[in-house]
Amino acid sequence: MLDKEKLNEIYRSLQRLFALPMSRSTFREMQNIILNALEGNMDQANALLEVFMTRNLKSDKAVNFPAKELEKLVEAFSIPAWVAKDVFEKGDFLGLITSDLINVPGQTVFSNRIRRIDGQEFHFVSDPEITVQIFQHFATRVQELDRQKALGPYTKQISAIKANLDAILNKPK
Image (cartoon, rainbow, N blue to C red; front, side, top):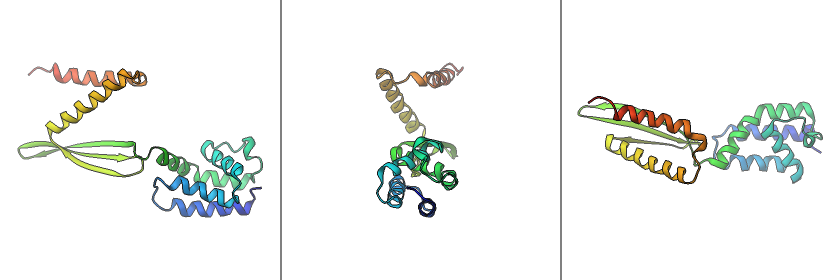
């Protein structure tokens, strides 16, 4: 049974875990904290993890957990737990891309930043030639998505890109 003492132990351990930078191993560490506090009881550990992910304190699986302490635990750590799971599952995926136009005497360049979901950030500078080359590369990837019938949910965004390209190409010279 998950008692108040074990929940407090989990609370303190999660405080320590989430005080550190998030990494791909954070979710596994969270699982280990819970499993160790529950003395290897996989059913209870999975039930507690499910409560974290769903925030459903009234689930059948959460019945054996002390309500007030569980609510405090879930309130404090469910969002970091979601982020930890997201980083664990999709850490290499892109989370954000930004570019700033920089006018350097005699040329125009972009300062580009790409951040992955796991927080890793990359910076690179591109000139117009490389910027168009990057666009061509991803336009080809979009064609592959179309051949795979995977563009359905993105048709509005594709239409907006087309409208932007049409505006560039049809602009009076």
